[in-house]
Amino acid sequence: MPLVLGAVIVLVVMLSAVLSVDTAYYYPRMMTDQLFYYMKGLTFLHEGTTAARAAINAEPFTFAAMPGLIRVPFMAAFSDFDNQLLAIQVSNILLGVVLGAIAAYLASWVLPQKAHWIAVGFSYTTLLLNPIWVTNMLSPLADLPYALSSLGSIVVLDRLIRGTNAERESKSLKVLLLVLFVISFGCRFTAPVLLVYAWLVWRDQRKTRGVRPVVKPAVIIAVASCVLILGLLNMRTIVSGYLFQPVAFLNRADGTGLVLNTVALAVPAQIIPGFDLLYRRPPVVDILHPVFATNAFDT
Image (cartoon, rainbow, N blue to C red; front, side, top):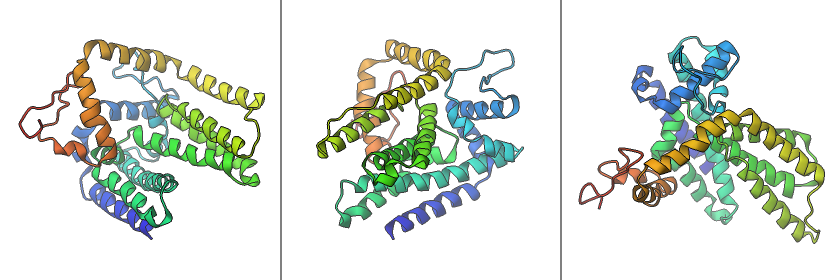
């Protein structure tokens, strides 16, 4: 019952917000990431390539393409941008509801059954009160599909490793895992960290059964090949867009400000919904030099 109630509340609130506001309201609120993802999908739809350009005479920009590719069906279904954006928003809200359910399910693993409602309440409250997740449901960003596909991968991995014999041998679950992993990797190139979780759970399961944890060579080859192929397909983006930029960022940014931003804002905001709203003035005015303690309250 709490799960259904939470899902209905999120659907009603978010759909009301989307359907009661003219799409033009979101035009100035679509910034670099949203536009780049949209352009990647639109370029793939019309030209069959993800080499999107910010201008005709400009070089293709390096950016993850998957967040745009998964929105291509909505771009193909409608020719008008307003309808495309509305369809993307509605689909994002539905994905958000599913994400809340999966997150609550994972949290329930470590909670007693009587406290499962807390996991449900926290998951759906975070979706509604955390500005980051609200933004993800209202625009074509990467966080929502990445969170959904990566958490979904964890659930499927758990069934493939600790499930029944039928689940461990299920080809459908293996195909589903492959699809979810490809989406995760395409949205965030840190997705291979899921393999660490798989290894730890599998090793623990084998030790519990009193069997020596030895991975079959075929499994190692299959996993390594999958990661290698995905890496090669995204090599240009990984190297030029995501490998060099962090180094340049660290060289130009203020080290103290970055540490403060991580400890005093970034991490707490991921745990406490709406934590960043406690600041009277947003400290991250400049991403390279965040400024804290601009007034007595924030100090």
